[in-house]
Length: 618
Image (cartoon, rainbow, N blue to C red; front, side, top):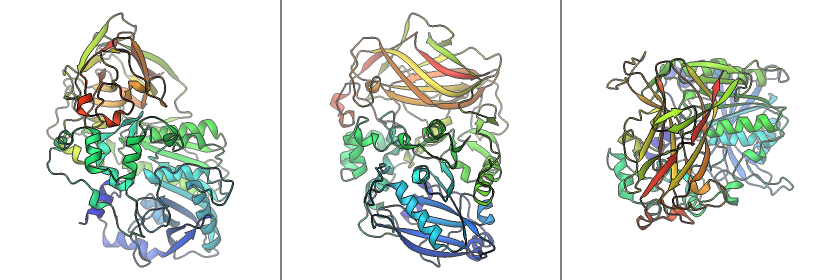
């Protein structure tokens, strides 16, 4: 298997087992493929593949269902056909005019690639962005594909999810349905950064995003820059690499995207203009945003996009779906659905595809656009009770804010007056997983629900746990960490984990071989926050040694029932390696450029008036 095909398989989420020849021939038997260059308003031409149903006619018109991507629309050639079209097989067999397009600067399209293309003012023909490219593409399709029904939908997962989300801003009258799936909303909190903290677990992905092509390409041109594993122990690679600065200088000095990240440690204009969220206004068509509770790459994106559209575009028919999936996992059926060691049920992806996704597109593209599709406003999978729940608003209105105070290794209803203390050494960071093979991957996934017992008891991890629960408690919505800390040094990160501790005699309905489920410490949610950004993301600010300081930040949302007989636990540490780069714990204007000389050991206190604020479903 060629390297670029392997990369596409691993990272671009082309899921599913090999198909029978009968299934593989469905596309070729039922569609005619055309390849065209579509000219944008500034003259740049974007390469586009169009699959047109063979039975299309004046009496049998079809809508357009489009995906724009930076991940290749292969196979190329009008006699070379994809084996699957659209977001699922049901929609493929219902038949649409399926359209795939390479975005600017990628594969066969002209132009220069930009990560998270900034939105611009649309005052002239030379002012272009992804929304204008979406508009111009739709305009060409409507005018040039005979017997289309005048309606267009769009879909995409991960980066194509971003192109779908930004495409909602095109304002083309033919665009009636958009489904951004695992979309990026703001790189400051998606994929490469969390609250501005560099996600080291993405280190191997940078050739995909930071090497410009110099000519039209039908295959990946960046494979020579890929870092190949040399050991099953993926942690060894990161330990041998040294600091983030060492890794950058050794592997990615010529990588334009890595250089941009290294040179912009603060939420400055570079990052601000790449945020999609401020622009999500005046959307009036149907939008269904989809995400996974165990999406290690883009969990905040779907939540933030849905909430922003809900707030700023009241005319939009706005829906959100969050399931027990990893990144893009809803696009393939697993049968018995596991994430890492945890079983969630059977045929969950099929339920979503058949009853939600297909209904959404068929209704708005083939039915009465003015009527509601009859979907719930929010379809959220409860990862503790293992069931779908429907809500008329999200976050749900029928919740009560509750503070769990961090006192003396317990979670309490009231604040205490003391503190807990731990010792943090950047040279001996807390591991982010016990699965050493996982560190060799393109992006981390399993850690999102992994057993956290490997971290318990370390001197650089403090733990707070409830008594055994006497009744179920459902956390539904947003989580806020409200920490009051003090450090002997001038900088620190704070990693907070929300954990479901299973009963000692727990036996799951379905299990993985070799896993001890009794007393399993399942991570439910987590996040990291650099203390330097506690007051402003735009400018880092040093800690004053030994001074009590508030560090408040949001964890990503949750929908999880902690069952009777379980416990709720919070773990806090200041390193989380190699998932995230190590904070030197000495304040620097640019911590990305820290050297080993800057590494500073510290004693860190977490005061007992610190709390984790959650929303409990009534």
